[in-house]
Figure 1 (cartoon, helix red, strand yellow):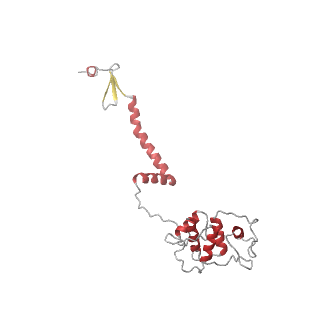
Figure 2: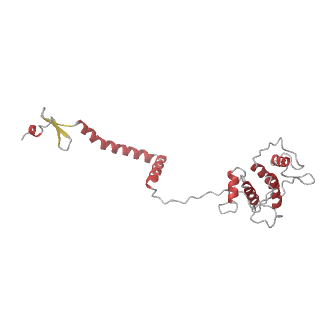
Figure 3: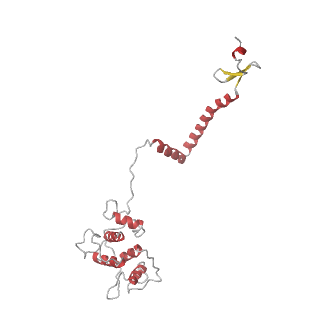
Length: 234
């Protein structure tokens, strides 16, 4: 049986691995044009992969990107490290009893701490510091040229605008000698009275301080911030 008899159903029939065809009219076998394209595809894929790998390993940021993408899909092969949360301040950590109040006040922009990133929560708060914090919490931003020289010892210092505004609002009063004594500490009771006046409370909430046995004690910075925070939650 000749080839013409075998392929009599059509002029071109596939054979030999579907790569060649036989033309009964011309009597010769040839490679199908599309088979050349199919033969080139594997080589193109290999060359593309090699180019990607070369670019990836020669560019560390790109390598990091690829690794991150693969890790997100397949999971990282490296052991996961616990996330360490940064403390609010160098001396106020997550186990501090003042953490919630300090976190809220810091996020609200009411307190910022010292230049060394400390808050010194156990130090006694000064009268000027408490008033400045209170005025900030009330969202008041007095200008110095409108609020100064309201006490004999309050002129144009950093705290003068806040102190003079608080005086004009009736939140604070000075001493009989006309002074404010900004560098003096104040008691828990003094702090409570100031908050009651500033926020126009009918009474002072009994749960503001965990320990109210000694109202005559000097109030610390942490206690004052905690008192302010709880009043703001009312």
